[in-house]
Every structure is written in structure tokens, then in C-alpha cells.
Image (cartoon, rainbow, N blue to C red; front, side, top):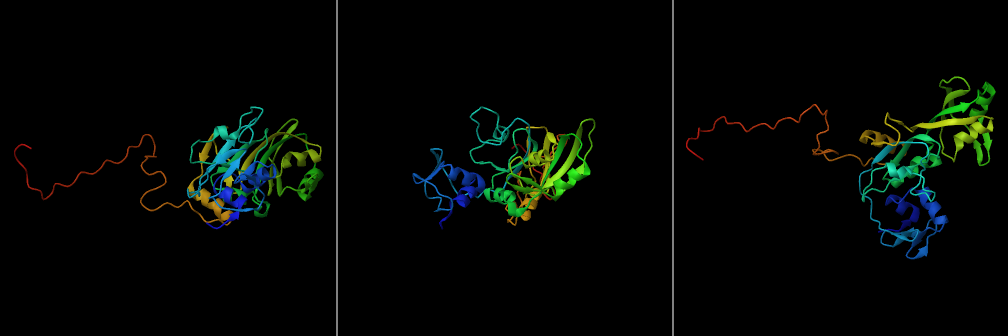
Length: 286
């Protein structure tokens, strides 16, 4: 096995996204063969790894890519665990020894809506990487009514404490009284970026919902619930970031082989009986 950078090896094994793994390395939480890991060090899966003192049992991830879309509720954090005991998104995801879920970006505590989750670390990394410029669309409710000059500033660029930021598009989306709804599109995902941009023009965001990530829109499912993306939707995501589609199944047996997935009022077709034509009539007892 040829050594590769630790971020890539652990991401492909489903430990987390490359960005998340880099953060853990900087914090000294990952060790390799008993020694603190360094970003970019060459490793193989034959070495021993630990996270926060707990061994990581890794093996090459050969499972087909799976992507879930979760409708994240407000008040839930995007983390594996919270010292304060707040609920986390992982409590809403399917659990199993074979699945290591990686969040594609994060939503802050008070933001709800679409959150993509996958078992493919490389896909997660590419979807989040700034160079991919994958669009994120949000529905935003603001307190107050910005004028046309304010909206132009948001599209031309606002200077934030971590650099300039601009919406690719803004369109009004209804509202009344003191509140106005807008749909805004970004092609990056910095921390609380949407809220900070509106605050920069003197507006307060009272509600924030992510409704699209790349080509995937928020489905009509209750908050706190998830659904699997279809193979064709996963293929769209992989093409978007120049990855080979690994969701194709061998002919003859599908992804849900052995399960009848039609309407509950539909019955599986009856098995046909062997033809008796040409047989001799049998007499007597059997």
C-alpha cells in the first residue's frame, strides 16, 4: 500500500472530511503509532490511529457512495457530541457499525434546512472546498426592509472580518409587517456568513433555512427526518466535482434487491406455474 497524506487516507476511510481531520490534527486529537499526527504526513492503513485517545479501526472503504439529505431542525448542533448536552444531528441519522457519516458543511445552531451527509470522505471534501464553488441557497427572513442600495451592496461585496463576501443573487420572496423574506445564493460556506452579511447592512436575521446545496433541493420531509438520495442524484453530485460515479449496480440485482417497494396496495406478481402441456396423465396414488 502506497503511503498518502493522512487527511486523504482518513477521509477515504470515512473518519471525517479532510477539513475536519486537519482541524483535529491541529488540536492534537489524532495520533499515529502513538505519536501526535502532523498535517500532510504520509501514512497507510496498516498503521495505528487514535482520536481523543480512542483507537480508530480503519479499513479501506469499498462501499458504494451513499448520500442522505437531512432536514435539520433549529436547536440541533452539527457535531458528534456536545459537552453541554445539546442534541446533535447524528442523533437523527441511521446508526450502524458499517456507516461513518460525514457532514457536507455545517449549519449553525439556529439555522435549519438541508444538510447533506455521506459516507464518502472525498466527495464531502470536494463539495465543501472553495475551489469547487458549489452553490448554497438560503431562505432568509429579516427584520426590517432594506432599500435597493443595501441589496446592491450585498451583491457587489461586503467587507467582513474574515474577508469580502457577496451574494451571487438575491430575490424577494414575500413577507409582511416588519419581516421580509429573501432567497440568497452563495458559492462558499464560511461560518455564519449569511447572518453576518445582513448584519453588516443593519438588518437582523430572524429565520434562516438552507433550501439547496448544488443541484439538491430540500425535500418535503419533516424536520429531524432524512431520506436517501437516488443513485442519479448522487451521480449528479459526483459529476459536479469530477468524481467517478461508484453507485452503479450490477445488472440483475438492484440496490434494493429482495424487497418489494411498490404501493402497499400492489401485490408482487404471482409466480407462473410450470406448463403441463405435453405431459402424460398420471394415475394412481403418489
